[in-house]
Amino acid sequence: MIYDDEGDIDYEAWYNLNKNYLPKEFIKLTEDKYDSLFFMFRVYRKVMKQLPSAIHELMLQQYPVFKTEKRPMVIEYINTIAETTGHTLLFQLYNLVQGQKEGVNIREKYPKFEEWVDFYGRPHKPDTIDENTRPQYRWLNDEEWITYRDHENERMLEFFNWEEKRKFEFIDLVQTIIFKYYEELYELNADEWIIYAVNIRDEYENFLCACEDVELFIDCGFPEVEIKLTDAEFLQNYSELSYEIKRNASALRNRRIAGEMI
Image 1 (spheres, helix red, strand yellow):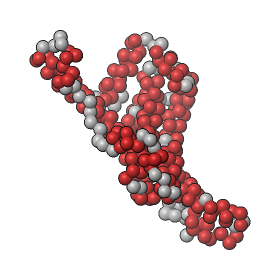
Image 2 (spheres, helix red, strand yellow; image 1 turned 30 degrees about the horizontal axis):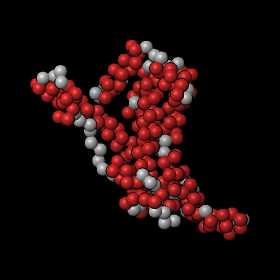
Image 3 (tube, one colour; image 1 turned 30 degrees about the vertical axis):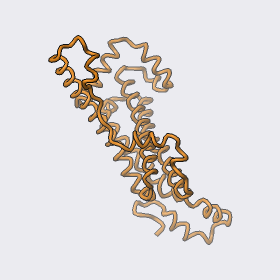
Image 4 (cartoon, helix red, strand yellow; image 1 turned 90 degrees about the vertical axis):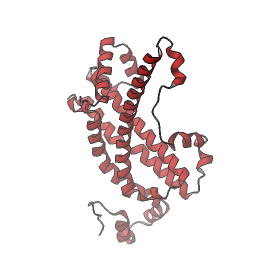
């Protein structure tokens, strides 16, 4: 069968069925570029067929304010985030897999590799206020200090857990779909897994920044046309907003962190 279980053309089956009828130039190209063609047909196309709708659903879950948006330009911008998420990551992973086949030494290729091992290879921990911080709060007596310290540590832990949960939801969704079609990733070695972690974390940071900018855009009531501003222009316009608008946007964010679906 030249169709797979999902109804898409099975590139390998199609090629084997038709190779005797194909131009010699095409045959040579496919032989020389088989890995690239396999990736585009069997991995990239498959993943990007499923990922955008899944990302869009996650966005509405993590940023419920997006559901309230009715302005066409803003909706288009939100949809673009969903449609482009994962694109760069897939090609980074393709290059990682190809590098493995070519015998690339990860530690030689990436001068910051040891730093990345420390940052990406170990579990993150929440920030805390400990006794080393005590001298900065000399105006508090010991009882007040303990109360303040415990309250701040509880608040920071809550925010850390909130952030980590959202990051896990994104990474779990993305890699579940990617690994379904890109089985060669299972062959990565220990050093290559660090680069994988760097790449998928960068993808999440891009997604996070884009979504948080839109959330802030909506909360601050920016005019629809300003959704097309550059980052620098957006930050400039944000800096010119009144204190009341900024405070309200901050309050909305804090309420969402606390669990309100607003």
